[in-house]
Image 1 (cartoon, one colour):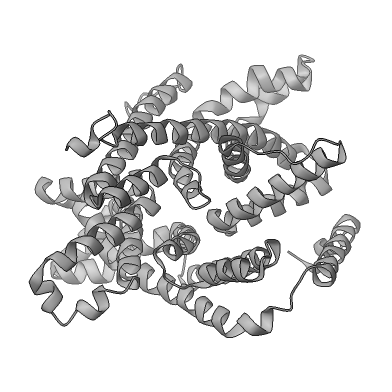
Image 2 (cartoon, helix red, strand yellow; image 1 turned 90 degrees about the horizontal axis):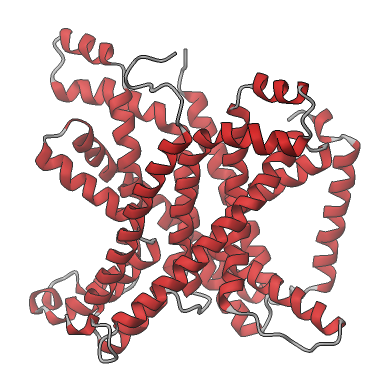
Length: 238
Length: 256
């Protein structure tokens, strides 16, 4: 048990630092994914034929290829592009921080999934509400902000909660490209003390706590998003 | 999609652009390593598919009791099943694989009777741990799916079967299980693709499947994109085959 203590002979501090890194990347990737997903969903629903086909290819390919392979491809493509751009502008090669790279690769992956979630949610909004907003002469952006997004929230939250859990668990994959998040910190601690079970179980407990807490938070968000809607369980709908 | 829909002007332009991209890849990237690594790659591909099939079947067999226990089991069966599903679904698969491989792998050599048993030659290899971890993971996710599937089967059907005097196990085998599986076939297809995407993780515990082969090519030949692109193509093809297979299953099942 003293192996897990926070001060230097124990490795607890390293594990917690890894957890913070993991959460930081998960939050960033989830946010980036939401932004991509919102544009993607609107593009898929209202865009022209070319945009729709391109987005279709994006979501299909990302969802069929393993995250690990995508992470490697996107990591190398991203660093190559940035280095070429900075060399063209006359700065030399730049070192890209692990956090930014992690957010970029996981965000692009998350974007494909949230495109589908948000598209389904927007489609579930009754058409009449959007048409009514348009009939009042609202500009497209105002319709999105005042009508579509609040009305689709209750449909989107369960799917987004799933995506958030996937994001937290996918950060573990960054261990393979050598980014020191929770799983890699755990492996290093375990390998140097030979106490594999202690550390892997402790890390598992940390991930589980994050999952369970997120469940509570998302349940509350869903309740908030559903405010004013008739409850189905009580059987008193409408 | 009909042929006419495929040949709209913008799609033709996109296909031409894609063809140019493929030709550019073929001309300007290095592919001379393929003949040398083809046998290894085939072996890796076979191992990926083999692991996928075995873990899906074993995991599904484990998921049936897990789902049943959660759907109708008494609390002393339902509670452990729910905890198992929550733990599996709440922690990263990579962590589970490493826990089993490094944890059990460091524990077993200390126990004399395991070292002396006939299973020891297998337990010293990596693949039993890979299969175990992937099976448990698939069972955890599918247990949750099957719980919903079992409780969604129409009660009237079960009552009808009961009133025919069928024994409980026959009811389960002939009515309950087939209907439950039929309802979740689309979900199972999606989960099987997720399982396919989980297989490269076992490369981290030295199982040589197709992803491990590509990593080896990358480090041997000092190239980055070529093996990864080819690898992504392989996974796309396998995912496509899985989708087609499940569509066939779904069609084979008569619907109302």
